[in-house]
Length: 402
Ligand SMILES: *Cc1c(COP(=O)(O)O)cnc(C)c1O
Image 1 (cartoon, protein in one colour):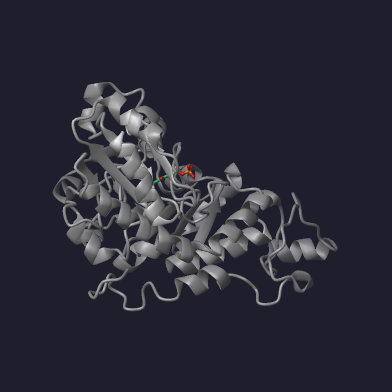
Image 2: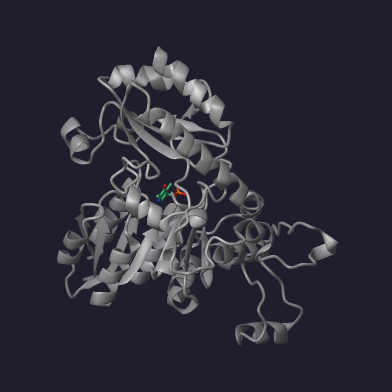
């Protein structure tokens, strides 16, 4: 789906992503004339003689040294992800959380402050408040998309403004123009975790955001079969992040990286179907008498529809909804009655997944704490996979009739 209005300040956006997904970052002729990049199961890389070691250390020859610092297939994936995002450099990590944690550890020091929109992945919130807090970094949580509150939380010590977009499970969409403008006014760098949007649907760097983070575990890898994360931005600014990754060792193993490379080949194709399925399911639910509310930025009823329309190409496969007059048990019965989606955390894979947030992600919250963060007993989060939309809709229809 596409809109007439330009969806990004740069006219060239969203062009050729399917071609980039297949070819970007790869050499045209590969080892042994293979069409695929090989897997290098090497913990270490050897040198012909001492002079070769010295030349490498003097940075004369780009090559591999030791598995904790990278491997050849990983460099291909990093170049492909940077190309897809339209960024200079991508750094790959073992998980999305490793990307977030090491990025923040590399960028911040004791006494620094960070302002974070509160509708974010609960582990990100936990890392900022509980872990970074122990090292003297202060996190200010402000309500999602409340730009004045974000600006008011800035102090002379603020070093980063951070948000997800869209957020999960409420699907709030950040107005990147306003977000970046706040950063620029105060000379503070901005970072967006765009895992839910992917570069197929949102181009944060084109709006002037400094860094984009993704959990590649979700749409980018796309097959619910691996974990990975990435940070994308300017090469020089990310150098400390790459160094710290090498110190900590949060790097994927070679097999995992190969699977990610393979998954990325069909990234654009999959996103097209996720977008179609998400919208079709959201529209079906919005018109169903048993549904109280649907959270999907592609619906005109969504509070962030206008922002989403202006900035996104499509709205992804994640649909959150409330069942009318249902308690927690009645809602669970609908989840259990679904035949196609499996019950599980995560999203973005080819298989549809479903969960009741009060059970899956907010089990240890009190009812008051849940209400405070907008998590309700009758809430269901559905991650539409790439199945046929009519099958997903028929499945929801039968489950809602029970
Ligand atoms: C899943 C997720 C993460 C964490 O990624 P992992 O690969 O599971 O470590 C971070 N941010 C968002 C928005 C996510 O959905």
